[in-house]
Length: 246
Length: 246
View (spheres, rainbow over the protein chains, first blue to last red):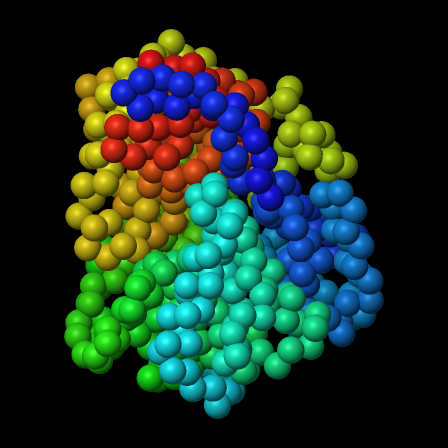
């Protein structure tokens, strides 16, 4: 995860030193023999990443759809049980492209189905657990993202990308057949539209971030039933949508 | 850029308030009638974004290759002078996919050609200018990225995405026919491989970030002749590649 590199530190003075920085590697994903995407990720948990990524991108509906998944070096080869179609664009485009509101076709958004209610201390403690990540503290080059339930952390993952870290924890949950409706996410990364969509698709009812929430994420969250909390720092947080945190 | 939303603030107590958050909108880009990509961006500077994005993704070699560019609402339609080919993947894949080192085919990386040398105070001042961004301070939901030369800021842009902000300043420079070899970038976003590649392709010789640099970015930078400085904070910085900052 961390690699030592030579670096020159300027600080009034000039010093040469070894610094630990975040490792970034390509992962080329083939689905049924066809190139699906190349992700730049941190090297660990590649199978979880591929499973979560294909799920949150809508290519599979769960690990049960995967016939085989082979990860070797920087290539992942996936065979699915049913044929898949993905064309030149693999981005989630919800509907027509005429305007923001038609783009955000509320009827097509995933609806979260869950009875989860959280006490705010659970969310604050989850954020503290995420911020304890050693990689995060040592290099400053990662995002940390954790999957939690009412009892605490299920897993915390670091990745150079906030989307990657989220795909990894979702993949982790899917592979282990966890009931994601009883879980929530705490992350160091901002909550943008794609992050909100990934949670909604995975039926994860709450996401809390150390950072900000964007307008489109709030719109998606409101229509999917996702609770979003931003600026979770110390004992504070701002809740922008949903009512699952008390 | 900022939009007021209703929010609940938990802070020991519970209060309802209006908060300003970063606006995020989709921009659907068609090139020669074919869907190229859908980017989630902050709404301003769409033409600059499209120009910079198509350039850094290798679709055009400059604004001269654009026959027409029409941005309406959330759709951009581009006609190029020459036919373009982009297949199912528009990601930069430099070469074969067998391993990290063959992926990073050094012979195919852009080589930066510039005589720029910077005094460290220029870089520190540039970072201060970027951090002064009002949007950045008010919402915490943006990345700020600026294009500078030895005389100071040419333009500073905020966007919800660090790649978007970089594409916008590069597009700004290209449209105005600036000689990018005499410029440098200061940004609040981390320097990952794609960010380093975008600078190299634009012949921008120096990038400085408030955040970290990844291993693959350093590898690309060393092979392209890009100077990378991370953790530029206060009077300090770490230089991971290149020797253009004294």
